[in-house]
Image (cartoon, rainbow, N blue to C red; front, side, top):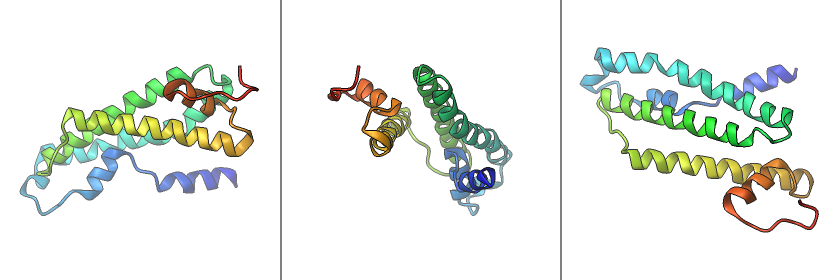
Length: 150
């Protein structure tokens, strides 16, 4: 039952590449080009990685009691950046607009910050704000610790 709920919840999640492929304008002349079609076909790699990291990241953090947080965050940032670069390249190959490296970097940084902030908020709701996400958020973005924190 839990596995079914997890599968259904992940079914609505899309990688940036997949979301870009879905949003492409198929009336563009470049849409039928081999470069565009090849880029569209390659989105399954990013989709598999996206779903895999949504499952693996929390499991790694729990299994290591947060010790793997830098590795998990770094890996997720790298995979997110690669996904966004490929999505931009696909958009250009299919006749759409691409993103600059600066725009991609800003999107990746925003996602990382939102992920840390969301995790910290969930920790706060779950038990006083001393969970791994709260500590990581304070480490990355500053802020006071409570009297119980080390």
